[in-house]
Length: 224
Image 1 (spheres, rainbow, N blue to C red):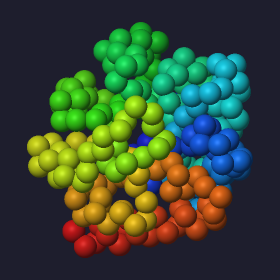
Image 2 (image 1 turned 90 degrees about the horizontal axis):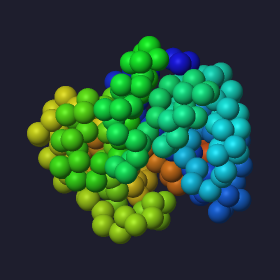
Image 3 (image 1 turned 30 degrees about the horizontal axis):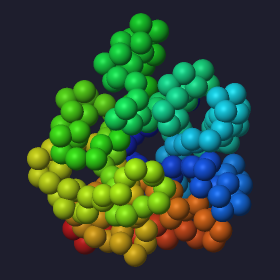
């Protein structure tokens, strides 16, 4: 693996989504480079439309970019690709590979410091992720979002408060419709790490987007 990620240092997590990039005519690779140049803390490559061969090629290309920075790189869903290119870890959904078997596989091949992230959408799934001892879990969608299909219901910031109350020391990210206009509510509710797609990936100034989000996260943390 390229590096060990300290989640205590992660504040802004960029989920680089090929689907969204293509739909708005943005070069994902160039966007990732700009986001890294301007201070994003963690990169995840997500792609639901490319062939497996193309996905592997894209992942290798992104890894080459990310390796120039002291930042972790995760692959969405594709555990085999993550292992093949020696990424830092994988992010899986509720219907993906079972965490227990993934950990067994990692132990069998003596792979250490491999990050396992898992999507959660309610308190039951959150408890399960904690019991599975994943590296981190993501809570979402916090607000309405168009980047994920079949997730019409959003959770709101109250779930962040509940998780902080129930599982004070848990490592989690939050995602879904988060932008500079609602970021304050997210951070004041207790979130330390924000994962975003379109708040960075759009036709605006990528660097300005990243810097403003990072600045606001730090400012709002001081208000807690």
